Image (tube, rainbow, N blue to C red; front, side, top):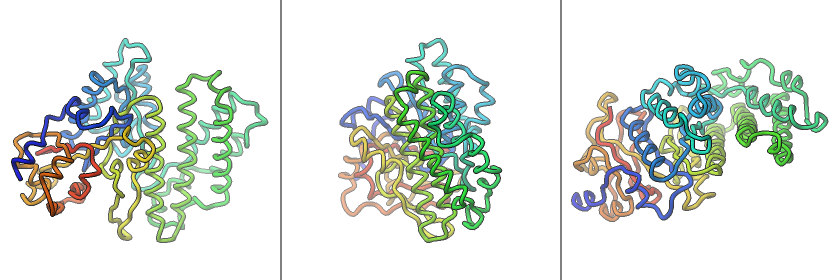
Length: 398
């Protein structure tokens, strides 16, 4: 078996990757089994550089706040702001502190310097404005959408005034209360004001769609796309807050589903502009149903990757990443009878494996799933190989 597995491994290079796929994907999804590791971020940066030079990719997207990401995109495309500012304010989940993300933003800015706008690289976040402790107020997205429309369409077409939105939104602290994540009664998501805001947000998005020809005649396409992003985010956040206020057993399943549906919508919008490399957790990009255990028990949902793949078909490709060791997290060499253990015996520090050939080499029954001693690392399920287009293995991270 070891010889058969060795024959499936190649260097992690764009050319080898494309050789595994039936066509160049519109969305190339690079998953990771844990966050923040320099080895994984460095691999992502290397691969993106190759895709830019060899395959014409011009956009990279990561699992970070889609609205904050606008500041990073403005910096890398036009030099707006400073590197320190965008690294502090342009990322969610505190990911602006990761050296690999600093290196990515520096490299994109240097690449874009002096290039025509059509050839510049773009940066995007695909995540909603969410953290583990709760969700953002819909104020930023709603008021930006309303402001864009108010400046360009007849006032009588608008469903409300900016003052009405401000009154219904109230203090942002009502929306961002961390206690609402574990106590639905603390959420304002099913208040009368929230219900009215959901209707107004829907009307504003509808008006944006109806007025598209007029708006595109008076607004750069990037501005129209930004307005659509604000519309998606406003309606998605209000839906998320609605389910935060729910006390039924479906609550956490719906919250996770809403989040990934927002990611999927953002990815599809980016894909409409051109091919994109997206980097996020394996669980957000895989085709299989995702699952995890939370304080109230196990939850399952369909990931952004599962949703996007149903729309794009072969134009969606998923690369899962697995690790050998994370010594600083207590994750030592994997047992030899697990999938990671078999891959750990390969000589390469990092390699790209053809999952179809790997599945054939493994035979039946498949190796047992690895059990990680650290909850922050999610081992790869050997039974999911048929739903993976490429497997990236990094022997030692950290």
